[in-house]
Image (cartoon, rainbow, N blue to C red; front, top):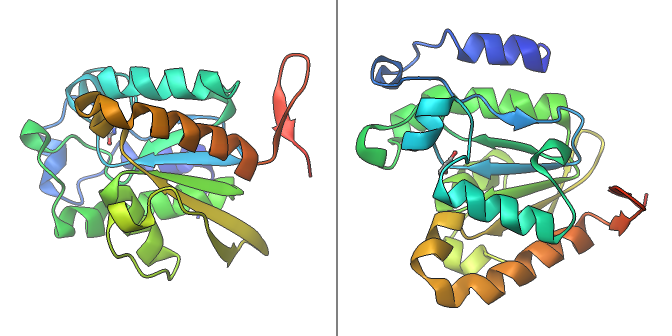
Length: 201
Ligand code: URA
């Protein structure tokens, strides 16, 4: 399995599929390896590829805003993607690329052992569902519902929601999205303390 540093070092040398040839930077993930909540996206876009960090473009700004509404910053959680290199022209990653890259996310989750995994969009939700033995139907059917699985000798919650980019294109979903983030605070049992959010249990 290895530590998070080992996994990140491996990612930064990865040649398991062709995407590494086209990337500027690998985008392993960011945040705390001790986080209780992990956010999983699809794959880096242009800004992420240039900066080597997930969700730093327009979708990332919205994610930061939503996190701040529930009193969280990027440092309080872990943020990563199913795919660690940018697919050209932001196309959806292929099954082969997901198969080649998916083990890194699996191992990152095994290191972090989060209480809650928030899947941002269809690609992340499909990967996480299948990996945790849940049947994936469609993002519109599962979004906003909490799924519970046994992993790492505890109950782990999986919460699929829309990808933030979808909200940028469909502003009418924004109110719902804010509610979903408030729900994240409830599901995770976050409670307000003077300067930080923590877990009740
Ligand atoms: N979209 C994603 O799915 N991930 C990112 O890191 C940025 C945009």
